[in-house]
Amino acid sequence: MARRAGRRKPKQSYAELQAALSRKETPGKFMSDIQKDLYADIEADFNLLIQTTVSDLTSDATKGGYSPVLTGFFASNWKANKRPINRTETPKGTEWERIRKTTKTIGKKKETILAAGQTPLIKQRHEVPEFKLKDRVYIGSAVKYAPYALMSPKSRLINYVAGGGGTASLNQRINEIMTDKKADIRIGRGVYGGKQLYNLRKITEVKPPSPRVGYDKN
Image 1 (tube, one colour):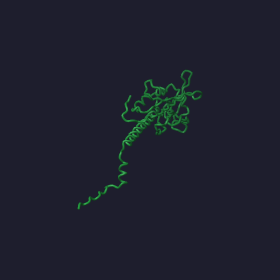
Image 2: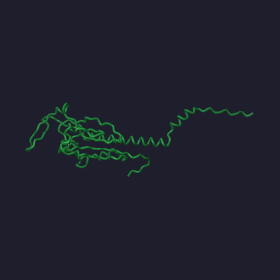
Image 3: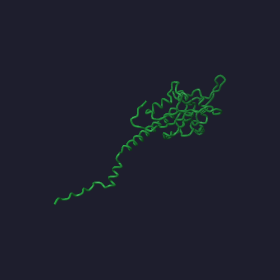
Image 4: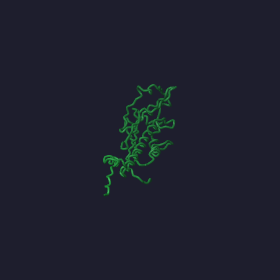
């Protein structure tokens, strides 16, 4: 009499097999992972662009930078936020308050200058937060007298935003950092009248398209 073959016992239980199958990368999951990685890369570049912009602005226009500088307080107070920047900062109680100033007369006009032996101090006072691609980002100086500082003939801020004047521009930074060209970045600036003579505002808005594999660069 033929011997009946014994039933093979599975090496894994049904639950273990299901768990193993769920861990296998399906085509859909593979595409999803690519999209997540691509989105994360674009978002990282976006945040680098914002940090670089604030760093660029935290500089002296007379030394190849962009901000008008007397004590350096204005140049040190650039901020990035999801809302328009409130102009509330004053030198009172800060190390900039100790920088002494004086005035001199040129023709019939008085000009404020640093006192002898005094030097400006420029350093970034406000940490740049992390942003999402969907965020609208405002970059501006938080000092109370920002509208007047922006009118200074020493300022090269317009050159930075609009380009030209022999300086690096914001558009150049976008081209350098956002190399994949997968995001729509729009730059705007606001002009105000009355006592607020001029307020520079940069709005960066990114609307990423749905990432895809095998795209052609234009």
